[in-house]
Image 1 (cartoon, rainbow, N blue to C red):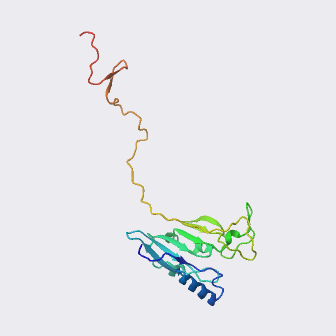
Image 2: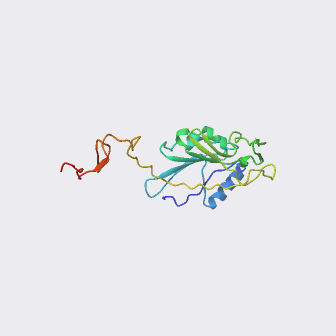
Image 3: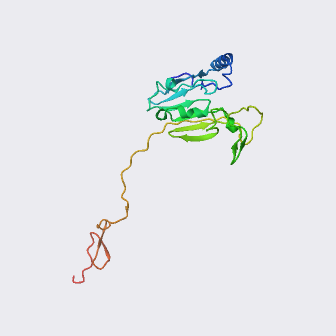
Length: 213
């Protein structure tokens, strides 16, 4: 791969509570080897011809996501992953230029009751607040994250760190068409046999017994 580092990050609303906090978090990430993407994109290419595009958008909460600016260098043919702290931002992304979006923010609802849902939905995570969703052509995955907010408690929303492994696969080769009924006879006999009028089989190249001889 032709980039020395592959550590990228986007900021969340708590990182953006003030200008100084945003600058401090960005600096700490930089010192740790991360590149913060603020409405920007990068292309990661291997030594061959394969590549993926990574788009980083600002948080909708306390930030200003700008998909038009972030996607200006993205080709529809590229496999593209979008990173954004706020899950509902997926509704603003270009469908034909986004394959996967990774988000967080909501802590999976933090307190989640099976069959009932959560009693608290964070702003910009009101529609999508946990798990995987197919949003038109985009696969969205909302991580539960590791923290808490308002109350230091979780219920049925365990903390998690999600690891994705991306593998390039070649398309399956085309195969020749197969008849619907491959066992159906086309009128010819099985190889190596002839059929007598009385229904008995006689091996080819071996004449039938002739009682007159």
